[in-house]
Image 1 (cartoon, rainbow, N blue to C red):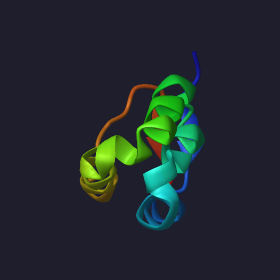
Image 2 (image 1 turned 30 degrees about the vertical axis):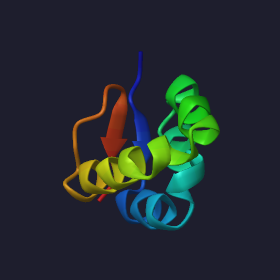
Image 3 (image 1 turned 90 degrees about the vertical axis):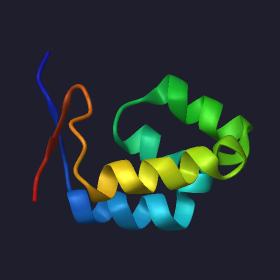
Length: 68
């Protein structure tokens, strides 16, 4: 399976602004966890903060290739 190329800066900004609703997970192609994050309101904020840290450090998500 080919890796999805994702703009790191764009995903980071979207994660900070809309990550509470799981939008960042949808962009990364993680539909299941995006839905979970949406219905739990970002894991009551904890999951949202963890994702911001993971994206800011360019964590190697499976099937995601950071553009920048």
